[in-house]
Length: 278
Image (cartoon, rainbow, N blue to C red; front, side, top):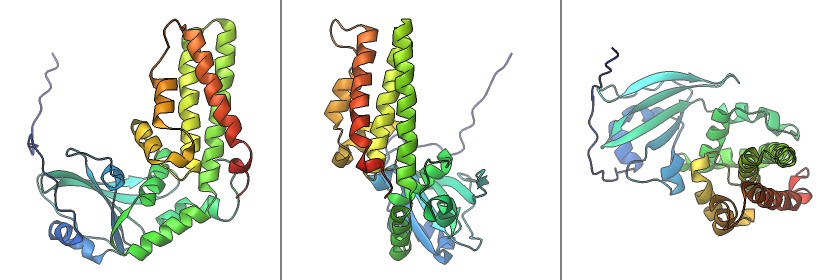
């Protein structure tokens, strides 16, 4: 019989207090990153969406090997993307908080955005991990070398990445709406309902990307909408149209048709100037 066991290496306290996230305090635990070119905090904590149990995400940029702490709470491993980008992962505990620290080459962003810098890329072919990297740089809170991160944001803004990603999401919406039409016509109302919800999520993503909100995590969708009024979709609109489900007396097919028409209306709103060459 299979009898798995669990060994607790470092127990997490029931009540967590926020750690000191000043660079001086972080250096006491990670003295090796003093040699880095640039350091920032990123992720949900940097975006203002974290909680007391959120990881502390740190990005460190260096072209030299850095010495990181070794203790019973940590693990470290190399990371690699099919694009050829590599990095070092370090995960452990700092002041009772989980820390996810990644060390990148200083040229990583220019490598990742290479296809979007010298031409207007039509669609986004970037992998999800690198999309997350670009987003996390866009919300970085500099701890060392603020000018470095300003250059990184200027690079993102000068590239065609946002428009390419928005066009990719627009194409997803069109395909999902085609699915809804076919499923409604065939009487597959449950599948049509699911496809309509997917189309609604994709059009919300496209609107957010074009407004500069590059987060790719669906769990933060309402937070993203709330923080980005320029995208043209409010939290209340999305919640009442999509998340609240079928209205009284509304069948699955009726719900799918209503949500699909809502997504289509926002698709039309985006099709002209916002998706043209920048």
